[in-house]
Structure formats: C-alpha cells, structure tokens
Amino acid sequence: MYWLTYYGMWGIETLIILAMVGVNGLLAGYEIALASVTVGRLQVLAQEGRRGAKAALYMKQHVEASLAAVQIGITLAGAIAAAVGGAGAKEVIAPMIKRGLGISGSYADFIAIALVVLPLTVVTIIFGELVPKVFTLRNKEWVCLALSPAMQVFTVLVRPGVWFLERAVMAVVRLTEGWWRPRFGKGWADPGQLQELRACAAWARLSRLIGSHQERIIVGAADLSARPVKQIMLPANQIKMLNLTDSLMDSLVAAHQDMHTRFPVTQRPGDPQAIVGYVTFKDLVAYMKLAPEQPSLQAITRAIVSFKEDMPLASCLEELIRQHQHIALIRDQAGHVVGMITMEDILEELVGEIEDEYDRLPTHVVSVGTAWLVGGGVGLDKLKDATGLDLTKDLPTCGAKNLSEWIIGHKGQPPQGGQELHRSGIRFLIRKVRRQKVMEAQVSAQSRTALPG
Image 1 (spheres, rainbow, N blue to C red):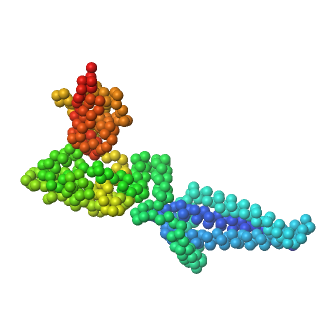
Image 2: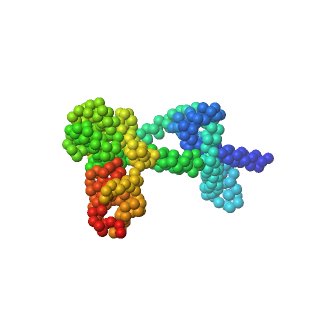
Image 3: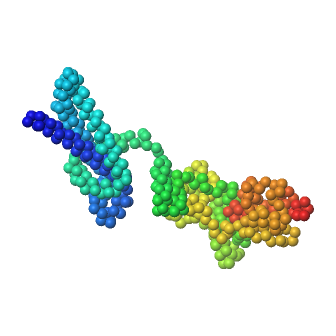
C-alpha cells in the first residue's frame, strides 16, 4: 500500500509537470499570435462578428499589459513545474540512487535533480515553446481569437502584477530608448519598417493579391519617406525660366518652345537665384487675348513655394497638396536655389513615367529645301533611310535609340532651343525642346561628303 501511494504521488506530480508544460505552450503560442496579428485585421474580424475578435482587439490595443500577463503566466507555470519536479526528484529518484548505486545523500540529490531537469528542459523547449510557436505562425488568427477571451480574464485576475510590470517596463524603455534607438529626422521613416513593408508587398504579389504594378506603387510610396527631394529635383542650371521684364508675346514664344505647363519667372535672365514666382501657360494664352498690351509678366506671376533639399519626398508631396501647389523651388541650407521639383516628378516615383501627348517624341521627317525637319523620336535607321545621313558611321551612337537621345548624348548637357551641333559635316539645329528632350531638330548636310551616294 505504501508503494502504491508513493508512486501514485509521483504520477500526480508528473501530470502536474506535463500540465504546466502545456500551459507554457499555450501562453508561448498566444504571445506569438498576439504579436503577429495586426490591429487592422482584428478590427475587420470584430466588425464581422467573429467569436473572440473583440477580446483579441482589446488585448492587442493594450499589448504592454497583455504581454505582462503572458509573462506572469509563463513564469508561474515554469516555477510550478520546477518546484514539483525538484520535490519529486528528491523524494522518489534520490532514494533509488542511494540504494542502487550506494552514492551519498548530497550527490544522489544532485543526480536525481539532473535526471529530472534535463528531460524537463528538452520537453519544455519542444512542446512548450517550438511546437506551439510554429503552429501559431501558421494559424495565428485562429489561436489569437481562441485564447484571447481566457487571456482577458487572466489579465484581470493578475491585474496588480500586470500593473507593476507594465509600469516598470515602460519606465526602463523610456529611460534607455534614447541611448540605443536610431534617430530619424522629422518625416523620415525607419529603414527596418520600410523593409518589412517591401516584404509584405512582395508576399502579396506572390500570393496574387496584387499585381506587380500595385507592388511598385506600395514600395514607391514607402520609399518616399526615405528619400530627400534633392535626389529627383531638376538641377538649377536646367530650369527653363521666363524673364519678368519680357513682353507677353516674347514669353509666349519662349514657352511654346518647351511646352511646359508652368514656368518659373526670374528678374535676371538665366539666373535661378532671382526667381520671384511662376506663370502658367494657360495664363499666358488668356492674357494674350484679354490684355495683349500688357508690358510684362508682372501681373500674372504667382508666388512659388520653396523647400529644403533634405526634405523627404513624402513630406514634400503632402505640403504641395496642402498648399494646392504643383511646383516648388529647392534650396540648400544657405537658402540658395539648387533645383526645382513638381508634383508630377514625385508621382512618377510612385507609378512610373507619366507621359502626356506632348511627351511623345514626334517621328516625322519632312524635307525643307536642302534640309530636313526631323522629330526627336525618329530612329537612327529610319533617319538614314529617309535622308541618307548615317549617324552611326564614324560616330559613336552613345547608346541612343532615336535622334533626341543621340543629340543629348553628343552634347553632354541638357538641350536648349536654338542650339546647334556639328558632327562630321552634319548640322543639327535644335528647334523645340520639352522636358530635357529634343522634340524637333533641323538636320542638314554641311558638306558633300555627308550626303548619300
């Protein structure tokens, strides 16, 4: 009867230990589930009326207290398992070692505890940590919804301990966070969080929830917070400006050569540091009809906003939208104009190149006397067939696919209307330019050697 009672108690202790390992596993799995499920997803589940969703949402919204309750539960389960296992080892296993091996009391106790602790550790790691966590990662929503109601009740029961741990943790975090946390400027995003967002977008594409274009928009939107405006701005020396003192007719002619929608206006010709505002092409056309005698652009010049060159693109876009502006100057720390940016430039970082009817390079080749008017989109082979002028012979193509790219490659700088280029007896007169591309050029042979035949 004694041995039955003796080993019966050991069986009960074993059941208690296994139960504590199971509790540890449930809590470890719930901890992963609560950390993995987003607030937005839980809000959707709560709106759908899913069982346990409201409790899960409450636990997620009070995550510090929730994690404190989980840790209290894990600690209690581990302490109970260790205490019961240690007591059982000394009461059951140690006497057997003493009688069987003839080892003294202290050594027998040590060996007995080791024989309990080592298997218990292995069982706890496998069944109390790894298995529950792997299962939870594959079924995080189900685990979170299933366990949250019980965990909410448990959190209330251990409220004093939760309150103390929550306050202690937040105090330590606030005290030490400034020492180790990376500092990001105002409006800048954490690179680690951006990487997570990119990974989520890639996963959504691979799961066919979104297309590759939508993935690009998501990634592009994330990158806007990590890139300064100076990375995509138009340099100051490439800004096409109108002169404040020019007449409306002269300004309209100058604007027509580039066909932009908006033009900065400068007080000193060619000087971006003297920009005082901007005009729109629509205003130029309208005032030419309403007040053609207007002596200058002063009456239709609008104020232009300025941003610092290190401003994040996301913040720049927000400011342009808030101020109802489409164009802005970019200044360095000293206040000098270093470039210009438009809302379209930023949007192109999200969706790719945006081309309107004026952006499409024309492909016409028209003979005019001894010269040809050639569209910037004409391929080099087509130009040779139409005019007999071979731009690839004895001349580097600079990787160009059309006339515009060829001229820009040989000039080595942004083109401007009225400029000339001479190569191997061929003269190129740039007639129209838009957004740093040659829209049209007059091509003529300066010598007989350049002519076909």
